[in-house]
Length: 201
Length: 198
Image (cartoon, rainbow over all chains, first blue to last red):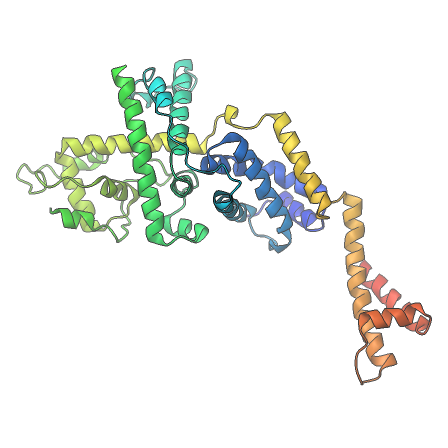
């Protein structure tokens, strides 16, 4: 069921009304930004890409059919913009070397992965650990090639099936699986050393 | 269980160890292992599955036979059980991080404002966005323009050229402007106004 306020905002946007655009931008910028952040893995770049996504969305808003949910279309535009961004010369969206020293430093302060389970969210110690775990995951993601990062983000963040990822990215199904497996294996290796380091440290 | 068979995981399976909400279960062998406790199982001492296959197993991307073999293997192989638990822990950490970014990972209000202002400036420059009143006026103009164009073509075709050939819009507008088609022009404007109101 499509939100009536959203439908109205889409209709307003089609007429060029700034209020309509602002409503849609405010409603979805967090979602688009977090997806871009996972894919480009850099905070500043993610903001730039996010705004590029909205520019593309607003330029093409006329093609959105009435009564259709905006989110899947936004996701598609975001993926396309990120793919273009990855391929563009100006992009810094490329594989960053994994900062092993950062992982190691975090690992020395971390307990094992399994000890995270079941702790209350309000526990300050848990929050600190979560923050470090989060940093380790982001570092591991940053170390991946862009295609693998894209596959991991679409699968684990967006919960898309292999086929849906293939449809969104234009990759063959085998490429989707390859990118996903390789990306996850690399992340697993990096996080394992992080978790193991915590256990010993 | 041979390595070739374990490596063959092309067919998707409906049953898998991934929770429907997207959260991995902590240890599939805990949930399923009791079903496969025969001490003399040929799978107990079988070849350990590759890491790729463990991922495929978690994704439910293995056929039913392979899945059964893996469950049997995982119920007895401590090493693979640990490997699977580590994968599960790592992927849970990935999902937690990606799905719920921390507040500190988002731009602050000032950064959002700057970026948003820049974007709307671009949109205004491109003529895509305008104020509400301007948007309404532009919509009216668009409808009137369309109505006028249709009216002009109609009038040009049937009043001035008969059935020979249609005037171009530019020619027709030129005729209206020079007074040659004042009556036709009035009809066109009336029609356009009506269209705009409809």
